[in-house]
Image (tube, rainbow, N blue to C red; front, side, top):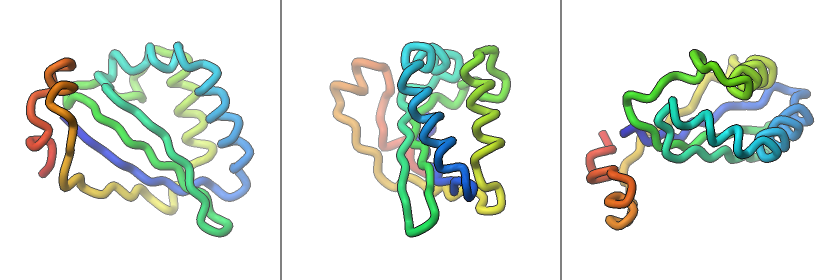
Length: 123
């Protein structure tokens, strides 16, 4: 299982486009859920943060190691996601991806979804 938190800087001047895309994802929620299955994505959450003039998007996810990559997706929404990504993410900033140190998930949730022991998800 991969537990990830990634931080990306929004390209300057693309904040309005980010608003549009977040609204689009919420509007197309059911369609977005359909994209998770082939990726074996159990949880995906997008956060947004502003620091002065800069904005950042954070992706938190729990995904099986064997999940398919978004770039190979047949879903229209994933293709739109990649177009958004190429338009709005500041590649000069790179990706900030801290390593998980502790993963706490109640045992009943792990049993219900067949996750095993979350203590094994940290490096």
